[in-house]
Image (cartoon, rainbow, N blue to C red; front, side):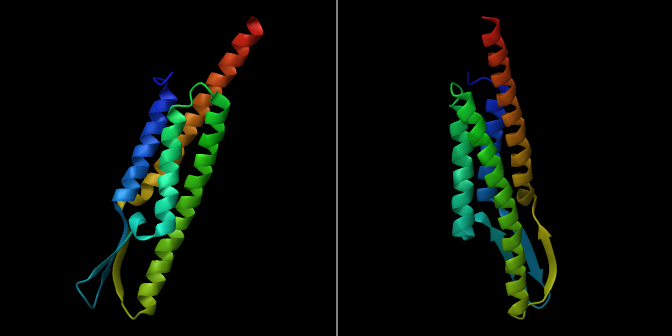
Length: 147
């Protein structure tokens, strides 16, 4: 059934992924120029493709409610992909900061923007969805034993 709570968690996780794709993740201002440097997912091909896969997988899991085992496995894989995306995102920001410093620019202020924390929210939502799927599977197994 699509109206299960884990379907809502999966939909919210996909929405958070779209938020990551559409927003800037990191901002740096320089002391010697009025220029501002941003890092976002759409500037890096690998990160963009990774988030597209994460979003599509979370959205596809919503409609796999008849195949709970597959839905659970894909949700766990999606959690792992999101954790990998978090690691890659922060290493990409570090690489960008190092490249800016190496080019002679002095970073006056650098900060992560709110959208950079959405992948952490995605992991929590995907975990809650996986837990709900597991509980459903456990309930169905216990009902099968009663027959």
